[in-house]
Amino acid sequence: MIMLFIVAVLLFPTLMFIREEMHANKFFHILYTASSIWLAITLYLSVLLILVLILKLFGLIIPHSYALCCAIVAIILISGYINFTTPAIREFKIELSGKSGQGHSLRIVAASDIHLGYGINKARLEKYVSLINSQNPDLILISGDLVDSSVEPLYESKMEEELRQLKAKYGIYMVPGNHEYISGIEKCGEFIRHTPIVMLRDSVITIGGKVNIAGRDDRSNRNRKTVRELLTAADSTLPVIILDHQPADKEVEDAVKQKATLALYGHTHKGQIWPFSLLTRAIYTHNYGYRKIGKTHIYVSSGLGLWGPPLRIGSRSEIAVIDFTLRN
Image (cartoon, rainbow, N blue to C red; front, side, top):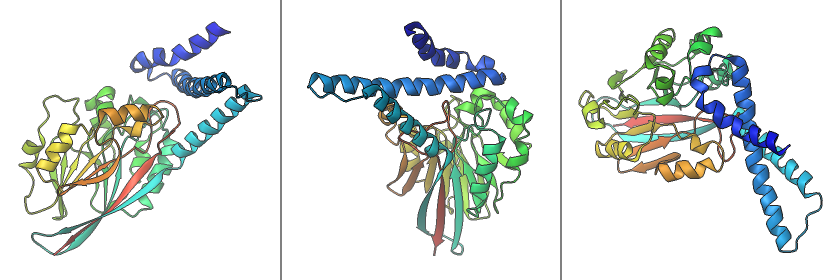
C-alpha cells in the first residue's frame, strides 16, 4: 500500500517530464490530470495530518481526525474547482490627459494564459468566448499562452471556429508566451492565422488612431527587442500599451522607464495552487494584480485557463475589463 502511494505521488513529476513527447495522447492527458489532482490531495492531506499530530503532542485529541482531514481536503478541492470554472471579472478605469486629437474612450478586455488543449477544450473555450464578448470590448488583448503544449488538439476539435466568434471593434491581438514556444512558435503562428487574432512579435500597431499596442516577443526568444528598441516604432503622441507575457522585474522596470501608459502581463497564474503562490511571489515583485508606478499602470493577470490540475487554490481564473479614457 505504501509503495502504491509513493508511485502515485511520483507519477505526476514523471509524466510532466515526458509531457511534450506524449501531448497528442488523450489517455496520457487524462492520466496526467488525474495524477496532478492526486498530488494536490497528497499535499493538503499531509499538511492536515501533520497538524493533527502536532496538536496531539500538546494533548489535544481530535476524534475521527483522518475522516475530518479527508472532508476538509474535499472541500478545498471543490472550492478550487469552482475558482477555476467561475472566472472573475476585474474592472479598472484609467483616465489620461490627451496630447492631441479629440477625447475618446476604449473598452479593453485583457486575458492571458488560456492554455487551449486537451485540458481547456472547445466546450470551455466556448464559455470563455461568451464571457469576453458579453463585456462588449472595443479591443481584446491576450498576454500569451493561448496554446498549452501543442496545436494538435486545437486542430482536432476545430477550436478556430470558436475563436472566430470573438468580437471587438478594433480587433484582437496577442503576444507569444513560453507555451507558444513549447508548442512550436511557427506552428502556433500558422494556427492563429486561421483565426481573427493577430500575433504581435516585437511589433507595434496603432489602433484607430487612439493608442499604440506594443507587442513583445516572449523571453524564450533571447534576441527579442528591448522595451526601448520596440517603442521607437510607436507614435509618441499617443498612449502606449505594452503587451508582454512574463512580468520579470527588469522588463517591468523598463516599461516604467519608457513611460508606457499601461503594461499587461500574465504567466504567474498567481501561483494557481497554494503554496506555489509563495514561490511566484518570491520570483516576481509584480506577482499579481494592479498597481501604478510613476505614469505606468501595471496589471499582471492570474490567467483565464490553467496548467496542470483543474484547480485554483488561493487564486482564481479571471479576465480584466479596462475602461481606458483619454480626456482633452
